[in-house]
Length: 371
Ligand SMILES: CC(C)(COP(=O)(O)OP(=O)(O)OC[C@H]1O[C@@H](n2cnc3c(N)ncnc32)[C@H](O)[C@@H]1OP(=O)(O)O)[C@@H](O)C(=O)NCCC(=O)NCCS
Image 1 (cartoon, rainbow, N blue to C red):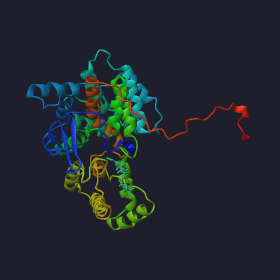
Image 2: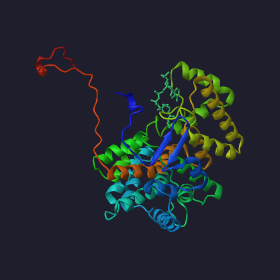
Image 3: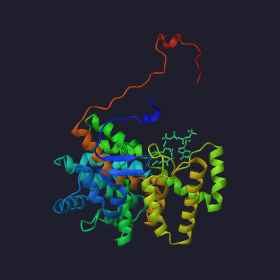
Image 4: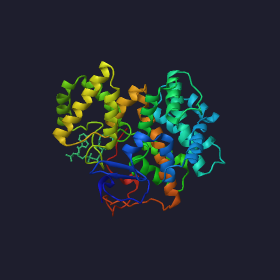
C-alpha cells in the first residue's frame, strides 16, 4: 500500500514522460523546452492525440478544424446565462461541459468530439467571464490561432504577437502531465466506458482543488499578502511554525525544479515591466530562494503561471479555468488512450475497520440523544 499511490505504476502510456530527478518533461518524445519555444497549442494537441508531429497539410486541416469548432450550442449558452453571477467559475465550467455533452453534435466520432471539447472549452471560459462581469461577449474567430482567440475572447481585442506567444507557451506547458490527479481521474471515468464529456468533467472537478490546479490563485494571494521581498522570511517562518504548506512549491514527481517553472521564470523576467510587477517577481524569487535553502523544496508550474497570466490580463479567479483549457488536450489524449486498450480501473483498499460487529436493532441501541 502506498498512501496517495506514490510511485505506484498504474498503467502504461505513450503520451508523456516525466524524469523527476533530472527535471525533464517529454510529450511523445519531444522535450517541453523545445515545444514551448517552437511549437503551438494546435500542434501539441495533434502530437498528444496522434503521438507524432503533423506534416504540413495535416497541421493546416487539424488547426482549421480546431479553430472552427469554437461556437457553442444554444443550450450551453443558455445554461451559463442562467447561472448566479457569484457562482464559482469551476462549478460553472463543470455545468457547461455537462451541457455540452447534452447539446453537442451527436454524429461526431471520437476525434471529432475531442476537437469539439478542446475548442469549445476555450469559448466557454471567456463566456462565463463575460456573464459574471457583464463584459461584452465576442464570437470566436476562425482566423485567429487558438491562443490568440482565447485572449481576444477574454479582452475583446487581438493580442500582439508576443502576448500570443506567451499564451501559447502557457498552453503548451500545461497540455499534459502524465498521471496527475485530474488526468488519472479522467482515465478512471473513461475506463468505465463513460463518455468523453463526463470524463473531462471529472478531471475538471479534480483540478479544482488547491493541491492541484487551484494553487496558482493562492500564490498570487500570497504574494499580495507578503507585500515586499523583505517580508518573505517572516512569512515563511510563520507558515513553517503552523506546519502550513506554501502554495506553488513541491511536487509528487519532481525532486528538482519543475522544468515548466524554469521556462515561466524566464518569461516572467522578460515581461516584468511595471514597478508592481518587478516587486511581485522579487517576492517570488526570494520565496523560491528561501524554500530551496531552508527546505530543499522547489517551485512547481503554479508558482510563476499566475504572474504570467496576470500580465496577459487574465483575472485571478480565471486562473484554474485557464489551466483547464490548457490541460484539456492532455485529458482527451489520455481518455482516448484508455479507450484504445481498456480495462476498468478498480484497485483495492487495505481494510482497517472492524469485521465481526453484530447488528443491533435501533430501539435496542443505548445512549439515545434527545434532539
Ligand atoms: C504538490 C503536493 C500536493 C505534492 O504532495 P505530496 O507528494 O503528497 O508531498 P507531501 O505533502 O507528502 O510532502 C512531502 C514533504 O514535503 C513537504 N512539502 C511538500 N510541499 C510543500 C509545500 N508546498 N510547502 C511546504 N512543505 C511542503 C511536506 O510537508 C512533507 O514534509 P514532511 O515529510 O516533513 O512531512 C504538495 O507538494 C503540495 O501540497 N504543494 C502545494 C500545492 C501546490 O503547489 N500544488 C500544485 C502542484 S503542481
